[in-house]
Image (cartoon, rainbow, N blue to C red; front, side, top):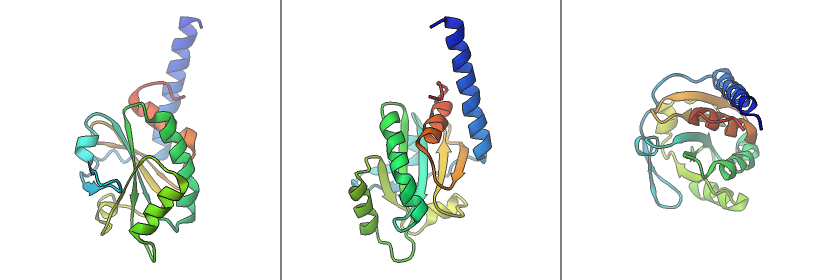
Length: 171
C-alpha cells in the first residue's frame, strides 16, 4: 500500500474515532476509583487497571432485555481487543429479583469471557451518576471518562471507541 494512502487512512480512522467519542458524550470527568471482587475471585481496582490500559465499564443486570441483547457484542469486541491494552468489566448492579447467582449463571450460559463483578449496594453506579441500563463508560489511562453510551452497544462501536482511545486506527 502506498505510504501516503496508509497515512491518510490512519488519519481518517483516528478522526472518525474522535467523532464517535464526542458523539457519545464523554463527561470529561475523572472516573471515581473503586474496588470490587470479580466473579473469578480476583480483585479489580480501577486506579490500578487504568494505569496501563483503557477500561470499558458496563453496568448491567440479568433480567434487563437490552443488557442481555448487547452482551454478545461486548464479548465479540473483547475477543477482538483482548490482546490490546484494554480491560472490559461488566458490573452487575442488583435489581429486582436478580441475584448474583443469576448474574453468574447468565455469564456462564453465554460463555462470556471478559471480567465481571457485582456492585453490591449500587454505590459505584451512584458514584458514576448512573441513570439507566445498560450504560457503558470508556475510561482512558489518565482515568478520565472520555465517552459514555446509554443503550445497546454494537461490536464495531466498542472496538472503534477503544482503538480511538489507544490512538490507533479505528478498525
